[in-house]
Image 1: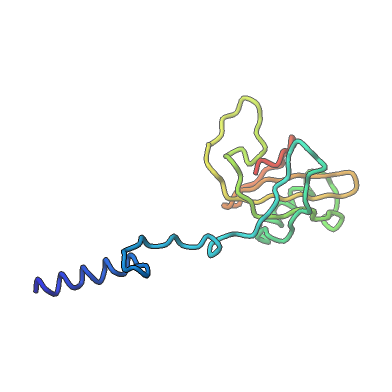
Image 2: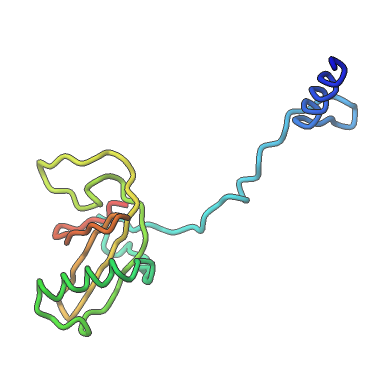
Length: 146
């Protein structure tokens, strides 16, 4: 029984490392970072309006998008068909302000999964911020915050 346990232990240790051509034990190699890289996305600089890459659209769940569009119609009186979806992307906000903090307010200091929706019609531009659970609000002093 003891021999079996020693054999299993030796196989386990041998599987964790390797040996080079001289027969010396080497440490296991690190996993390749290329196996887990995400697509690169350039984030806009909120202080430079010229530094805004082409926005992403189509990443917001349809029920959330429809609720935001209904809010935009209620606020402005503009027909839903007159709005153009210029941004509707999934984002990770830096904190609970969703990139739209108000002076004097406290926000959770943790990353928040959510969405960023921008609707435009003529000179009207509405910037909405949402959480993954579907709550949203209109951001009137927009900075990207991502």
